[in-house]
Length: 88
Image 1 (cartoon, rainbow, N blue to C red):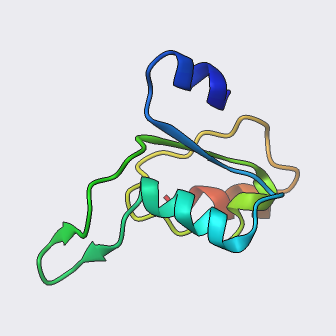
Image 2 (image 1 turned 90 degrees about the vertical axis):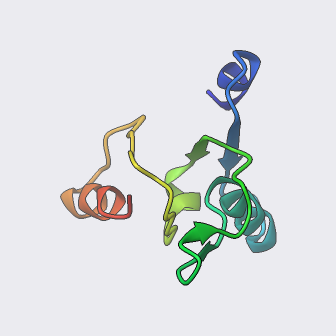
């Protein structure tokens, strides 16, 4: 999915379970840079408009810029579905 969207010209990043913590954080910051509440703006401009994450890799992600969560596969439990949706 990532490669397909990128080939179509979308600014897209990905987070996978086999990435280390620093790699995942780097990808998340390229999608949702840190927000300066006093200045009411992001510290830097985002590099990605779309971030694709595996279920395992997305656990604990708090992305301030996310306006939508799209499930490629239906979560196995209602709790997982609820947790994913309430992060955005």
